[in-house]
Image (cartoon, rainbow, N blue to C red; front, side, top):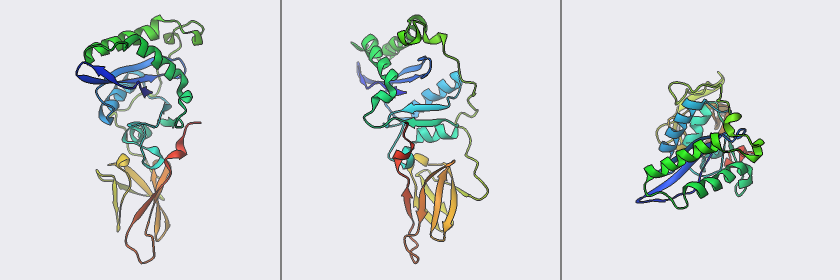
Length: 249
């Protein structure tokens, strides 16, 4: 998945969000959004998940709203994917070839739908819909042996849950649990510390390490540790795990 840049359609900007099946090259989604904010992107994914099922993994670049500067590069969007059991693969910075077939599709999309752009966002969406149908069903692909993506694509057998936002992670009995507040802060016993906006309202697990330190987990992955920096200190600091640890290979 990716955004194909942005361009003007009359008085509004258009940010094309594209989602493609990596195996068959089937274009699941090509929707012109008015911004790259997390909310509209999440609604687009909700529709895709309900129609096509849940993937095992999603590959993206490191831009917003797919990733952030939070621990492990988590964003509100990718935290939701994690609760749905979807693995997020982030390509390395400056390595668009790691999403090469998607980039090639984007070049064709731009040439056939946005040179020049349509005059309204609605008209641009009609152009995207026409392109998606032709790309999936009508146009043979050399990389597919002159077959079309629809010949190879199969929807996922993993049905999207209801409600679509999924469930909290279940933690082992050895971990305490606490739900972060709407600002991503942890209040637990006499501990109070900001964890991350990306994990606002999420349930996290806490693993005891010492009287001054607890590891913080989001699902199976450690996201950092909270600790009192000195034996007499009541101040709490959070030490995040680097965002680079979950790069795609």
